[in-house]
Length: 428
Image (cartoon, rainbow, N blue to C red; front, side, top):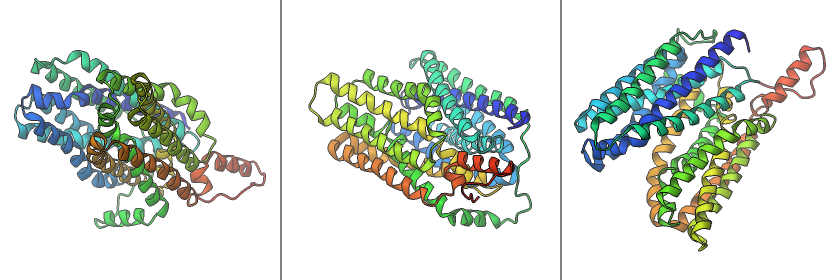
């Protein structure tokens, strides 16, 4: 990595932390703000959360093409300005229509930030440094969300609209500050499709869908996000309260255990996964999450003491955090390495779209199931976790050495460069 790439990467990481900090300020309090503070009711609050998902699903297919044609930085700046306007107007909105339009702008901007920042990380890293770069991104995102949520919780007062207006104004300011920080980033040159005909957007999607390894990774990604992230604040929380009798304070402890596991374990885990096949690391995450669902099953169905049930439930969230720490330096770099030259933005956007679909479907399926059908819920997601292991091992058979073991490919390349004989062939 050159000095210029290192300087750009540091600014990108600052950007990740600031955007997560801003989102952490408001996301946990959206429901309370819309339903109670603005007095618009539970239905409107639910629609606001749905609008976030719908806006992301609408803009992400276009975001990938824009990143490929124009580069990630201009797309990121446009997304940040859109998100800032959405956040500020959401804090001032007093009726349902204004709230929904503001949420759409905030959701669209937030959704586009993810693939744009991921593509910038790809452009400013090498195959050898990419896993560490994405691990740092995930670490800072969780840290920013946690700190933002903690500070935001001390600023808001459900009896004062002005406290929420201040909250959304601070979020908007974070996005605008990030515009200033990112506008000064000097990105290294990378291939762009600037002369492509208008119809080539369809061609690029056709090319992506023709990449069997990428299609398999998208299917695997959907299951990953559906079985874990899509259950955190919906199905698993409902299951814990209804089946295991978990108190709200214990649920907060479980969420804190998840974040703490990520923050503490991220870089220790990184050293472990960097020298192993990516497909096998993902397969291992499936097994860890299967154990997590067994612990959840014991918490709700084991007929033990309330203390044991609570401990098992908290351990479920902690085990999910361990799996997340293993995935962060594995999945995102794999998406980048599967992308043809100049197409990283398209591939990152496609994977972000899959993530949004899973996060939209996961709560809709898991919430009612976790609240009422306790045993089927635990068994279903135990099977999904085992399915992750199976899908990951199948994906591994389609990956080249450079994609599944970039450290081995880099080592072989160095041997060849020094005049030695490679021990195994590497295909791009």
